[in-house]
Structure formats: structure tokens, C-alpha cells
Image 1 (cartoon, rainbow, N blue to C red):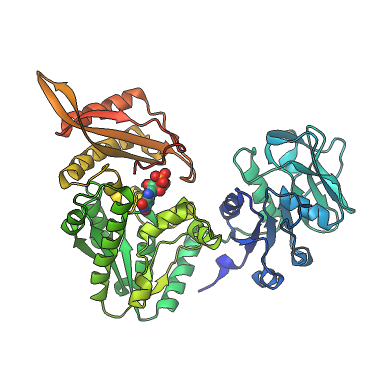
Image 2 (tube, protein in one colour):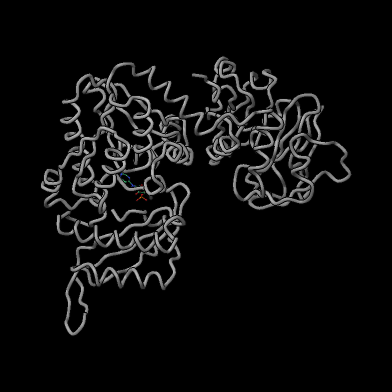
Length: 522
Ligand code: XMP
């Protein structure tokens, strides 16, 4: 099988910008493979990578700071096009003999840029893109105060500072603003122009190209061995399973553990999709009692998480040991997880993964890891999933935490509480789906509050439990805003829950953003 999808690749060097991942996503959206590496990547590695083009990210430092991240000479020696963004532009300017200074008038946030007045030079990168004024996003206090020899300014900001520059002799470009972020009008088009027009990439990075490539790779890696994989009902493990199944057929066994804390019909949906529809071998393990017994009397959220996590590993291991010739553990690790752990960061994403991972298991069982999605961003995972024929309900599902309803029942987890929450959550999801709001929300769910309040229904007084509804919009789950749910819809959901779920007589809507709240209540 051809390795064409990787034959045109871009190198993104990270100088510490919060937007570096977005640059990579834009390059992928342009149809080219790219990888993010730290700015300190060695020259040998840069050459071995054989990039078709290099993008230097922004960063918060000043190029003259002692110990500030530097530009490796190999970057300009390769002769491939280089685009420096913000700090990356400053590095290029300084490396070629230009000067960078703190701006007197700092340009932060939205700014207008324009073509150079009276300029006649036609930039291969900017010309058609910048026919007139354009709104961009700036986020640095320094600017290029003196252009290097052989460079021209290709755009100026409203306050007369160089907003973009390029070399007349080499394909070297710099932009003071951030084309990768949404706040820059048509910024993605500029990155696309760099990738396709300046560098001449052909858009080889496609879902079907990836699938063909990965199927061949999985087959040659795994050989005649057997792979075991934990299905969680989430997107990443679902797509991993579908891909591994295409490649390996009977050599793949999936394990789906019902821990008693799943959403309504979740187990049936997973079995219907994978076992019945796709013919994947799935062991459906009914372990509700084991999980729920261990949670009796436990109220501390972190303790609940630990118990659920450990019990999951225990159940998974028991099952996996029974499968013959198992040498591999399939996992739905995706590119943001790889970047997070490479950076040694301890952000939310790393945390999330540790709950999904069957941590420690590979070493104990002598298993090797098979992670076919480790090069993909979430939107790419979704595209691959759709191309593999997985249903939209699975592909576009909101994320669900590993401990499931266990962290959405505040305090002690009880079977009857889980039953009530499951019903309320299901009604909530049904209404969001049918009203068209589900896809506008990043994550929505109901939370069970184990307190009783007084109500009145018909002629009688009620004294029952409370359910809170949560819905947030977010890009990265690190910060989030509560969703402005239409009042009529809230009314309908509340009525349905109170009428249909016996045991709930009050519904509230959570209007806390993150920060200061978290998305989950525990
Ligand atoms: P928080 O509540 O920290 O959630 O704002 C951010 C994202 O992480 C998910 N989350 C978890 N996922 N195990 C998981 O697998 C967990 O213990 C866990 N806690 C939170 C949460 O659903 C949201 O998407």
C-alpha cells in the first residue's frame, strides 16, 4: 500500500503559542499531513522529517530575552518555504539581520491590516487574499521595526507597523497576526494558500487515503496476533474498533463493560452497531452489581472515580486473559493526547485520558499498544468514522466521562438514583435532538441531586428529588460557556421530566460557566 498520504508533510515548530494546535488543524483542513514538534527539534531530525514547508508558531517571549526560544539554522538551510507567525516572524527577521522592537502602541486583539500603500510587489502568499483592508488578530507587543536586507513589507497595520513581510530571494514569509484563529477574517484561506499555492501541496491527506494506509499498517504490525479493545461508546474507541475490524476481522475482540452507570440504551446501541450490524466480535460484560456494590457508602468524587477505574481494569483484564494469542491492546488515543503527553502538560485532556485508559494493563499482561488514530484530530476522527460507515449518533455524540453517571449522581451512587437520572437524561437528549439544539451544544447532560424538595402535582403534595440540566459550548473543554437554551424548550423538557419520571418533582438549569464551575458537577 502506498504511503502517499504522508509524502507531503508540514512541520510546525511550537514556540509556546496557545494557538499551535490550531495551526496544525488548519494545515490538515487544507488536506496535508503535518506534525507539531518543539522549537528545540534538532537539525538532523528537521532534515530527516523532509518537510514540504515549515510553519513557526507564535510565542509570548521577546526574541531578545535571555534564553528565549531560538531558530535552528537548518530551518532556513533546507530551502523549503517557511512561514513565521508572530514570534516566528520576529525570529525570521532577526535571523536575516532585521530588527524587532517593543511597539509603543501595542496592538492586541482585533486589528485592521492593509496592503502596502502604493506597493507594486505581488506577494505569492498575500496578494489576492489582501486586496483591501482585512480584520486580523494580533497578540504580541513586539514588531519588526527594521526589515532584513532583501525583504519587503507586504502589509501594514493601521498604526503603520509591518504586519507581513517576505523575502525577495527565498520563500520566507512572516505575518505579525495569527491567521490560524477564527478572529482573523478568512485566516484559514491564508494558511491554505501557503500550503497549496506557495508549497504546492496536492491535498493527499484524505479520510479514505488514511483508511487504506492505516489498514495496511495495522495488518503488517499485528501479523497473525490477536487484538483486544475496550469499547466505551465514545467516538474514539468506536472509530478505532471499526478501523481495526476492517483490517483484522476475526483477529479483533472488543470488550464492552456495562458498569451500571451508562446512559439509557447505551449498551444496546453499542451491541447493535458493532456486533449485529458490523459483525465485530464484542464481549458484553454485565458487571453492574460489582461496580454498584463497591460504590455503596462512597461520597467523595475522586474516590468514586478511583473505584470505578480500578474495577473497570479488573473486569477488562479477566476478560482479556481468556482470549487466545492476545498480544495487542487497541486504544483510541488521538493527536491532541499525544501532544499533551509529549509536552508533559497536566491539563484536562491528560486527565480525561487516564480514565479511559486501561492504565497499567499493557505492562501487566505483556501487551503492546495499537493506536491507529494517534495522528488524527477529533474532526478527522469523525470523518474517518463516517467514511467507515459508523452511524451519526455515535460519531457526533457529546463526550461522556469514563465514570459515567457515577459523577453525575452527587454523593453516594445508588441503583435507584441511576435509574431516575437515566430516564431524565434520556428525555433531555431526545428534546435537544428533536429541536435541533443537540449539535449546537458541545456537551449536555442531567445531574441527579440527592435532596428532596416539596412540590404539588394534581391535588397532592409531592416530596421528591431534583434534577439539574447542564449544557455548555466549548472548543477545548478547558473553558466553557453555559448554553442559552430557549425558554420554551426548557419548559417542555422540565414538564416532560416531571411528568414522566416518577421520583423527580423539580428541574433546574445550570447557568455556571467554566471557570468558575467545571463542566461536570463532580
Ligand atoms: P470538567 O468537569 O473537568 O470536564 O470541566 C471537562 C471534560 O472532561 C470530562 N471529564 C471526564 N472524563 N473521566 C473522563 O473520562 C473523568 O473522570 C472526567 N471528568 C470530567 C467532562 O465530561 C468534560 O467533557
